[in-house]
Amino acid sequence: MNASEEQHPQPVDAIILAAGKGTRMQSDLPKVMHEVGGRPMLHWVIDACRAAGAARIVVVVGFKGDLVRDSLSDATDIEFVEQTEQLGTGHAVDQARAAFADRGGHDVFVLCGDGPLIRSETLSTLLETHRNAAADATLATAQIEDPSGYGRILRDAAGDFERIVEQKDATPGQLEIGEVNPSYYCFRTGPLFDRLARTGNDNANGEYYVTDVFGIARQDGSGVAVVDAVPSEDVLSINDQEQLAIVDGIIRARHGINSSETDA
Image 1 (cartoon, rainbow, N blue to C red):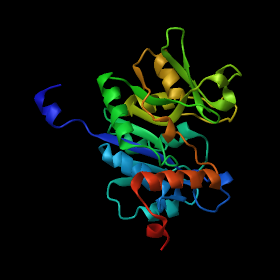
Image 2: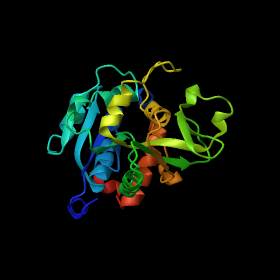
Image 3: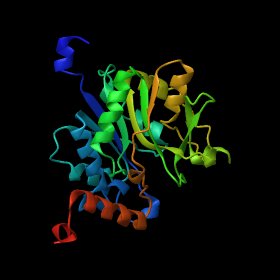
Image 4: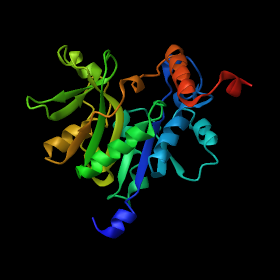
């Protein structure tokens, strides 16, 4: 890297997946529009991306996407693409292919819009690891006591990353693994979209997984980096109203938000 590149580092972009309905939320809202800390959970993810240096953010919308668009109508750094069929995370990311056609050499965060506990510091560590390793694909992992519901990280006998297996596809032995995938990724855009075209849907859900890109990259002999960077307390799913209330309390405590400030 020359002096000019050090002064003007390559920007990072972001793709945020926000197309899901979230059936278990028992609500007519898109899942990412449910509020924590008085704001749609998606907005917290966007804040973290911006704080980590994301210059361009592409949000993948689907169910009642107009509500998501309207909530961000004042944002000048956000673009939207639509996933008309819910065919998995890999399919969702692939809807942004055209938006990145001229940015093959860029790095891009890929995140889920229903993860408002994400911290900008975690994303900065993820990006730093990705670039220091000159990796095509990098993921952050977490060690948690109850891994139920999360993809498990498979490693070989030497402890090196092999692939991610989703819970529904895991063997009983793999379900015992406590290292999980909280869905914080950083990719080089060109190889990301090349490998998405090679994913299949031969799995328990019949869906295309973005997580399969990591296994394909490893098979190709390309750089895959893994960093255990996610605090266990940040790995909380929001799949129902009870979990939403728990995360709402965490967000309020973290940011010093009183209920009276948002309920008035």
